Amino acid sequence: MTLRIAFARINQETNCLSPVSTSFADFESTHFLEGQDLDKAVSRSGFEVPGMFRRVELAGFMAAMREAKAEVLPIALFSAWAVPSGPLTRECFDELERRLVDGLKAAGRLDGVYLCLHGAMGVKGLDDPEGRLVTAAAEAALAPVVVTHDLHANLTAQRVEQSIAVLSYKTNPHRDHFTRGRQAGRLLLQKLRREVNPVTAWRSLPMLLGGGTTLDFLPPMLGIFARLHALEVRGRVLGASVNMCHPWNDAKGLGWSTCVTTDGDRDLAESEADRLAEMCWRVKDSLPPHFPSLPDALIQARKARLARRFGVVTLCDASDVVTAGAPGENTEFPRLILEHASDLLTYVPLRDPVAVETLFKRSEGETVTLDVGGRLHPELNRPLKLTGTLLHKRQNPGILRTAVLAVSGLRLVITEGPAVTLKPNFFTQAGLDPWKADVIVVKNFFPFRLFFAPLSRKTIYVKTQGVTDFDAAHALNFDGPMHPRDHVEDWRAADERRRVIRAAD
Ligand SMILES: [Zn+2]
Image 1 (cartoon, rainbow, N blue to C red):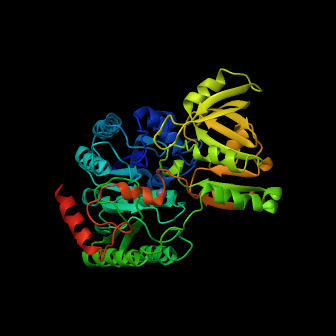
Image 2 (image 1 turned 90 degrees about the vertical axis):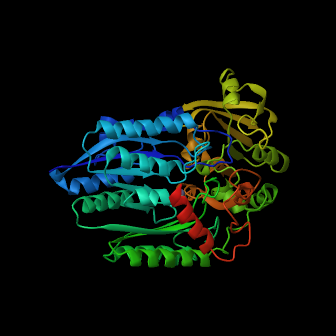
Image 3 (image 1 turned 60 degrees about the vertical axis):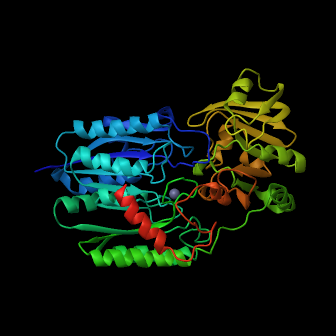
């Protein structure tokens, strides 16, 4: 009999400190595909998330389905992805959940479900929304559910108990989306054919930060990632993950977690999940590096003459990282750059839909005086009054309209929507030549390094004040003492409480 397996993606990473909430329209305007459009996007020649990812989890899952040939009928429900930002509105979550449940019920008899979830999605007034989605899918389909997560997921007992396995990326920066999706598909098929009996154990640590840079190719995380790989090549470990959590998420049981799925061996799953947790706890005191202030970074940029002559100095605005859910409207950057380095040619992105609206009514070359910033998070990003020349107006896909205002050496790239600034072509599309700049400001933590490599001769991470500062999460309410904000002697008390209490929720 043909196995009927439904699949869907609901993906958004939530920074609960951002006041910019996420609506269903944000998913629709960023990425929302269903039915035949989704079938095409996840086919061998398709482009899974147009403009962003060619072949990621769902394409990987489909590769596993194709390996099974006529035995399987994959049923595409929908794929929804929104830029990391503040929590989803309750209406938005309800709409996504309703579509998932209705889609599963309309699909008729189902043998299995694959859910591609970020793992750190937040919803106003709801704890563990993704756990709720996993449960809703299992109940609507009356079939086993397999889940994939980003490794910055905040794992919960509900998700572990309602699924046959939760597989998180085991690379940082992430580059195994496709293979994790394929592994989830293969595992689900093996389970449905009764070839394996997945048994999962997990551990939850009261630990927000640790692991140094957390990159998988550098110590101290190198050994932990190597352990994950080694475990999975053993026959009886079907999946092993370490989740480093999204520290700006107000989930009750926030923190790092480990998760191991074996073929029928409960003791092995428990002992390996425990061993991984011990390994993570041992790297807890390797905290992220201390970042300089913007004036100090500008002194360094000024001194880096050769870097500026043969390329650019790249400043990462670590307090306003759009890919970690920040609004992208940090006005401290243009303010301090004009104060300390107005002679350097500096490109700075800033999100302000109102300023864009104003500038689009003016002509290129005109001198304009206007307020920028303070629209999305005014308590933090004080508005800044500027007088400058409107250099360019552009309409680009993904970030909507863009206007460039020139004030001395500052080129303020004002965007209507969130600007991730992953690649130098963000500035090219705005009408600026990246090679001419002395300094370029970006708003993502790591992936830019790959795309800016040919251009950037020096990279400096900068701290001002914002919702992606490592200490910003200290303002949140946790379910007990939390490393590194508080002294935590042993992780086991929190782990036991979380696994038991959460299971009873
Ligand atoms: Zn991640």
